[in-house]
Length: 382
Image (tube, rainbow, N blue to C red; front, side, top):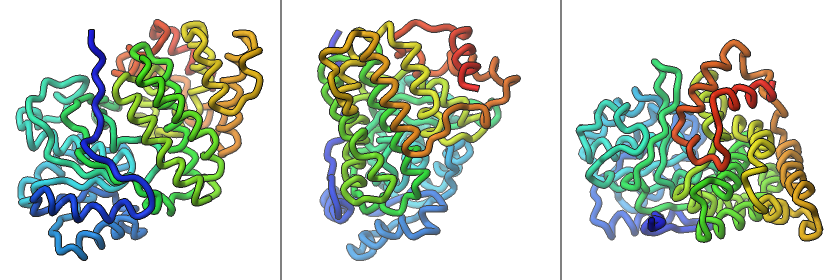
């Protein structure tokens, strides 16, 4: 079977990348933007950086900000209604995964009205038409939603996250500008950065991985590992490198899938509103240990990419431990909690384990798993 790879039509990288938005909008003949951004980004003036570009170019837009950190079905449906009356012909998503996931769902539904209930988009939905064109401007270095074919929407009624996978939702252009990320506080920088590392590591060992995706993931692990500590301290070079590293990780995992770190993290976001990056970072080392036996020699190259010396002379047991230790050390250095005891209620574990097993990311795990296995993993993290 052929391996498919889907990427943006165009992407701009580096300081000042958002200036290209005006030329791209005009060059494509767009007349009005529907800008999706969350309330905090508007409050703190981050969204304004893009709106200033539009204003200076005389481009018309309307802002939609009814977006929660874990966007809901209602957020999407309200956005669809607002888009319909706005007269817009393209979307600009400014933010982290929340704004971009909301924009993707809106864009897909506008182009495919049969899926207006939102729930029908879960999994790999049989949509026929490409999304309304999306310009994506990330403000966090983690989700890589600007280059992925995935989005996640929370079903509040069922306390679960719906993972949606659709190559028709990928933004046509990504504007990856580290200046848009400069105002991220330390905690958010750490959480989103560890999310990016999780993407790279899970993508590298996932069942669908192959040579092309491996190339992206190993480079992403290297960039993120050397840059995240500096980015947390708001070092400009660290910020710029993280902006690139998380994008490179997205280029890979979007095309090959993830694993049970993500499938275990998603229910925590749905039930407890746990930040996605925090959940991933806590779970990642434990699941790496669980998966080790199914990863061949890949942990050797993870350890090497993370800066561990002497990997070529290590035994299999040694380099697998080195890879896990390197992840734990990075997580600790950037201030991530070590366990889930302050997040998870033990009585909720059966629900969490079943939700994780049913999650769309679970089949990509390199090791066959069960509800019982996932239950044990959750309990080991308390």
